[in-house]
Length: 288
Image 1 (tube, rainbow, N blue to C red):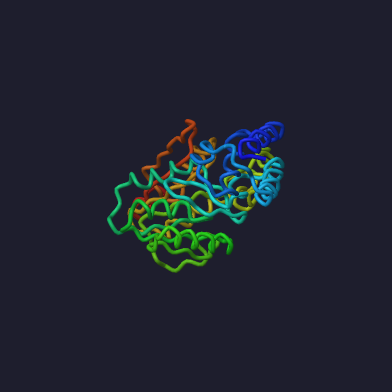
Image 2 (cartoon, rainbow, N blue to C red; image 1 turned 60 degrees about the vertical axis):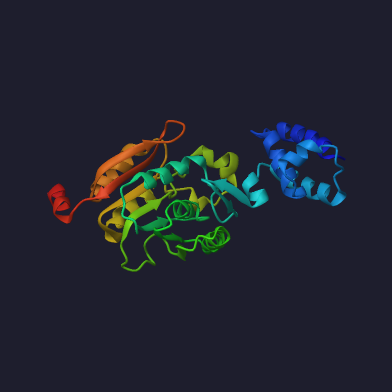
């Protein structure tokens, strides 16, 4: 069995299993097990595949045929400009979340900005911001102990020492420290959404996907509590579902945020909504 012959057979099997990207999937698995570069795989495609590597590939390929995400099979994934370790304790970072990162970087914030990342998971958002803004002080929290441990490991491997991660259910374990920016990609899928039974979502932690019956439970909790943890004029940035822009802008406005805006993702869908905390006097007038 050569590299090329294994690739041919693997691609055929993944096509039958309805993998959306069979060639890419097979190549990633082969690179993972052999430890080779893509250039060498192409240039030396007739290289024999040792039995031990073939056996390891068979296990991974069978799991992929069953639909298990590539990110979980190889234990890592690319996000922003970073390669992150991934586990079943966390969501797989998606390209649309990069819109959240870009939005934060585009804000006019002080050089030593204090950032709070709620529901940090693998640390993707915190670490992407840290890689772009070395002077920012970033805190990521998650209610999953496994996720926090993974995020800390990612920070160490990337050499980003101005980020810290703690276990907390949203704001509950936080002190009275206040932030210039609170950012989050919280659970926002409705409990009965059929997409939960499709694709990668079948294998991801349900607690990181489902935001209550209407998908807005966690978004509402964050909007309600954020004002107590923001500095005057601070910003709250939220990722949400494609149809939730109007609802999230309403939650922001009802929680004392002004200048509310919604941005679209790479597919043209409303994806990120944000607002700036209004002065207390202005909030009182709005309530009146």
